[in-house]
Length: 185
Length: 100
View 1 (cartoon, each protein chain N blue to C red):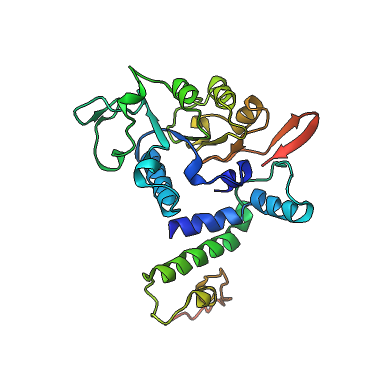
View 2: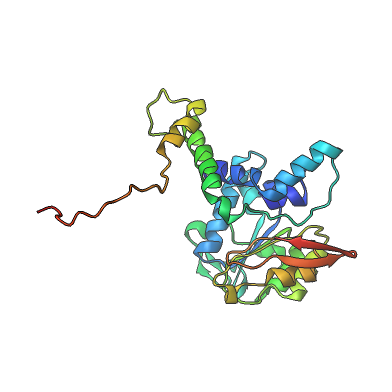
């Protein structure tokens, strides 16, 4: 909520595009909770709220492959329902995080995957190139050595534009932006 | 209730508080200075209390609070203060005779 307020005070949780790496209990829990908060805000319907989320797991984007199955996760049941992307969006094979970011142009990237380094330089640059002025990036995995990207790297690769929060502790980052040194907590 | 707690936490974000105070003083534009999105851990007791109050107030508004029905939203803060545990301990004196 605070990241959205800083990135674009006139926007809201309903107007974001969320890419979540990790479709396990953490990823699904986050997607469900945020989706429900969007619905509670009264701005859009449940179907429209579901559409704001792209879940990516070990085998890539979670999308419909017919007969009640989703790519990479198998049978679609429970909280996963609603978050499985439609095949009509044109997905084929294993769609990696970088391709998802390039196509979807997310405003918010959340990591709960324990896939160390998954938020690579290319992924962050693609997020910025997609037109996102203030990428909101939350690599939440624990412990520190499994984090999707270190705040220092995220801020370097996005030239200080990203708003970062983590699940593991990291020290403040000192960055030189346009000649001015800033300390980012 | 979770949304109420999350919204209260966001209001207490150092980055948001700075944004609010800069926009009040110079009519809007201010660049993000790098303030933390979340409050410092040292402020946890105070922040946690604020979130608890926000959640309890929402429960009263939603009619699902387990307190008596005559508790109003405005009363929640005082009630909550009474319930806060503070780590203050009594001084103990050793008695060699003990309980015998």
